[in-house]
Length: 117
Image 1 (cartoon, rainbow, N blue to C red):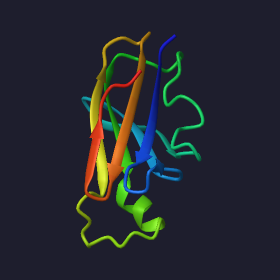
Image 2 (cartoon, rainbow, N blue to C red):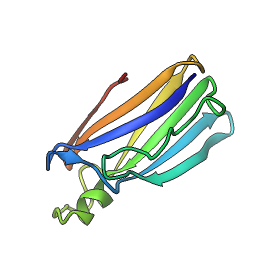
Image 3 (cartoon, one colour):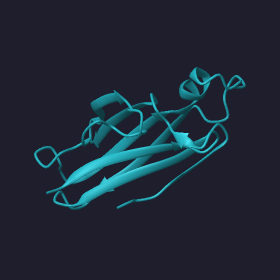
Image 4 (cartoon, one colour):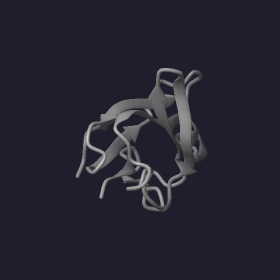
């Protein structure tokens, strides 16, 4: 059955981004609708799927990763405004029965993402 998950790695410290806040939104004609907001666990993951088999639907989505607040909480001196504040990833789900994993590798000055497995 389909589901959506994420995993965030802090490449500046070489560890999972425990505590980073993440928001999932569905994008529709009326704009963005927030479906879920959470803080990542000790492994840099949500404690469960962001979307499970019952809530997966074909459509456009957005993940918002609160990068600058996470690094500030870790004691990293950040400029104001920060180079990267919130990473916004817009993506599509074309198969509601599929597994969509959206990893993020992040530092205060760079990030990378891909469709994982």
